[in-house]
Image 1: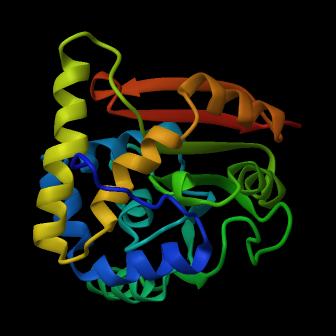
Image 2: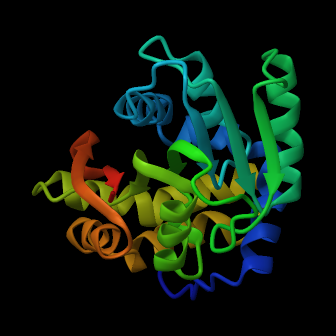
Length: 244
C-alpha cells in the first residue's frame, strides 16, 4: 500500500460483493497478470489434492468467475462429476456463467448466489469442497469452515487456497514491496477501482498465519490438516478431511 493511505478491510458482505462486482470484467485478466500466470498452477494443484475420480459432487465456495470450478471438470489429474459454485457477487456469477457456457459445461457446473457463512445447500450434499482466495474475504471464517463441514459427507476432502507472505530472507522483502506498493498501483490502473487492489494486501496481512488457520480448520470439523507452501509461501494450500 502507498505510504499514508488508509485502506478499509471491512468484510461487510455488501461491501465485498460490491467491490468484486465492480472489478468483475477485469478480474480474470488481472489475476493472470499480477500472478504472472501462476494462479492457474495454484488452482490445478488444489484440484489435484482432492484426488477426484469422476464420481464426486464438488462445492466451489466463493467461486467468482468459476475458474476453479472449470478446473475441477477439465483437470487431466482427475475430474469431478459435477460442481456447484456459490458466490454472493452477482456480476462475478454472471461472467462465470458466460465462461461455463463457452466451455460447454453448463450442464455440469451450477451457480448459486449465496453467502459462505450461510450456504443455501443441504447437509452432507458434497463429496469434496474447495475455495480459492475467498475465505480471506469472509466476515467470520470459522462460520464458513463449519458450513463446509456441514455440507460435506464424512471423510470428504477440502482444499483451500489463500495468499500468504514468504518467509525466506530476501524474497520476503522483495515480495512485500511488490505486494504492498506495485500491485495496488497496477491493479488500480487496470481495474479502474480505487480500493480493491489496496484491500488485497491489507486483508492478507490481517488473515491468520498458516499455523493459526490450520488450527481453525481442526477446531471446526476437520482432521488430517496439511499445509502446503506454494511459490515460496506467496500462497498456501490447506488440505483437510471432514472428521467422521
